[in-house]
Image (cartoon, rainbow, N blue to C red; front, side, top):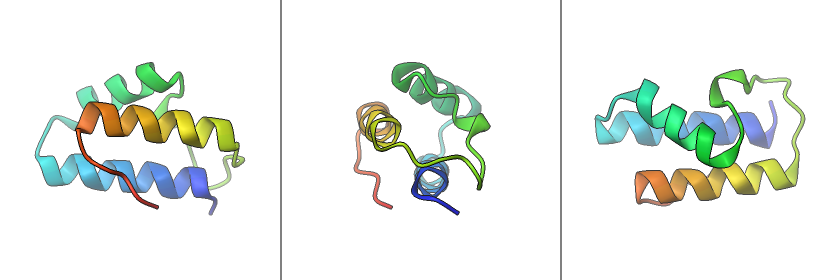
Amino acid sequence: MGKLYDLRMAIEKKIAETGQNAFIVKGQIGLKAGVPIGMIGPNSPDDPAVIEKLKAAAVEILKTTVEL
């Protein structure tokens, strides 16, 4: 598994911890980053630019840090 997939798992964990609607929050993050989170799989290629966009969007929407 790559860093991009690990980031997806970390984001999903943070969403679960907040108790927010995962479908809505993942959609908001995906739209903000331009990356559909649900399409990120274990074999998705690691693109540093995509990772940074997704991480920044998650931090902005969740109002917390997201670590790999």
